[in-house]
Length: 228
Image 1 (cartoon, rainbow, N blue to C red):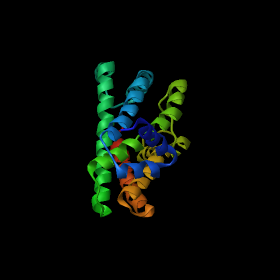
Image 2: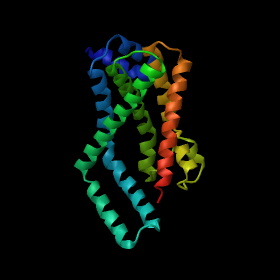
Image 3: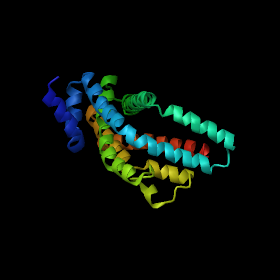
Image 4: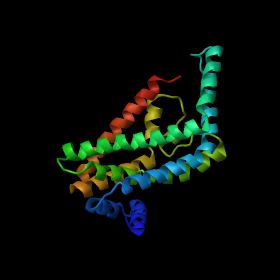
């Protein structure tokens, strides 16, 4: 694959996503999946040493305040958390999580396009769509991570949750999922499906938004049920 063409697709997904997806519709290879995913993985792993101590400290604070655990149980949880913060283990876990998330999203979009929209596209094309949309995560990292590091807290939100107190409720967790970067991904994914399946943007946007809201609801409900 021509490196210049690949670079254009990477850049265009931010400024002119329809151009990226039109190119993928014409010709897609596994490079279109691997390179965007690799970029996100490398950046995530590079930032991990700076973010993980803050995340662990936050989790320990929640456990310390929890009345569900005895002191012995808390010590056991702390010990388990320390083992899980092994750099190699965290790197492997992060990589697997990114790949698994991309695969799940791809399956959802593929189902939406081939069944709900009544279109036909190869799995590889939709996988590449997901990979390029995932690059928007870099913009999210660029905004959130400097704030997380400077403020030493993971409670940094680019969603309506910013205006509410974190009480662990379903409503608060749901508001956190309405992140501006997540909405950006929904819009770009909708554009991608519209281009690839040759359907009206309104129709693809409706389906993608419904799938996303179902995800937001499920994640929020699960989070509130396991609240400490």
